[in-house]
Image (cartoon, rainbow, N blue to C red; front, side, top):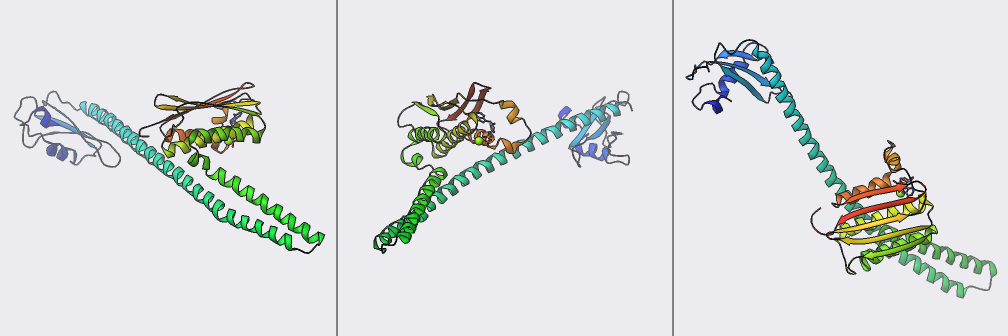
Amino acid sequence: MCESLCPDCPLSRGSADALVAQEAPRSEPQVGVDPAGCPGPGRERMMAGPIPLGRNPAGLLALIGAPSTLAGDDAGVVRSAAKQIGLVLENLRLREERRAREARLARLLSYTMRAQEGERSRIARELHDDMGQKLTYLKMGLKVLRAKLPEDQAIAGLADNLRGVVGDSLEGIQRMAIQLRPPALDHLGLLPALERLAHESAAAFGHRADFQALVADNLRLDPDREVVAYRVVQEALTNVGRHSGCRHVSLVVEQRGDTLLLVVEDDGAGFDVAAVLGDGDPGRHLGLDGMRERVELAGGKLSIESTLGAGTALHAHLPIDGDR
Ligand SMILES: Nc1ncnc2c1ncn2[C@@H]1O[C@H](COP(=O)(O)OP(=O)(O)O)[C@@H](O)[C@H]1O
Ligand SMILES: [Mg+2]
């Protein structure tokens, strides 16, 4: 304010405040003579108006000049300049608030995804160790019982059936445990786990699959990023199997400097990516959104290109090192 124009000037913030606090409505710039007077020529008069920001003014805009140069018309100039400054400040405040909100959401999402993976691991262990052991015990017990049963066709048949049911349940539990927490990721490492995923998915959906790795054999990412890579490829391959009707899918894992590139490409039906993502119903593309969200939270980028009748290619770039 005035201090910046002339260090000795008594037209201080206090006097401007007092001026605006006078009887007239606060939104109107006020003209007055500084009560202490002004030592500098041409600075005897001041016109000050509040800069609006929310409920409380953010500050004051003051014009200082000689009585002859500071006319009543200048009130309009002060008013609109103060309003413009208020709008700029308000926009800056809103932008800052939005940035903080987005950062909070990203942290929450990242925490939720990590918690979800932790919970999946726990359920997988529980299924495998607890339920799996008990069913194995039951199956063995039925085998022993069956050997000791009297030669009664009906009872022997029932015991065989029960053993069959227990065996199926065991397999089901094993499959579920693998889907919940890919043990291959922990035991074999990322590349064999991805290769296995491609072949298992192709066998389940009845198409051919190629796997190509252009990376160091012992490549490992930080564990969270490995889960991201695994889950993205898993969802992409599931989409290929469920929606593309392809004959062939290829999975390529390639190291490019500090980035790991994952490409899942099919020769199936293709789809209109923009139409699917822009259909206004987020519930219908949770898989695609989830992949993008995971990759971006890990500091990477995801893109999907698709041509109707020719197939779909998904590219996920993940940073190998460094902070997210
Ligand atoms: N590889 C693909 N080939 C053909 N269509 C696909 C492919 N991947 C995704 N889509 C289309 O995008 C839509 C959204 O996919 P997604 O978000 O994973 O949801 P969902 O798999 O549950 O339908 C799918 O319903 C399908 O129409
Ligand atoms: Mg899907």
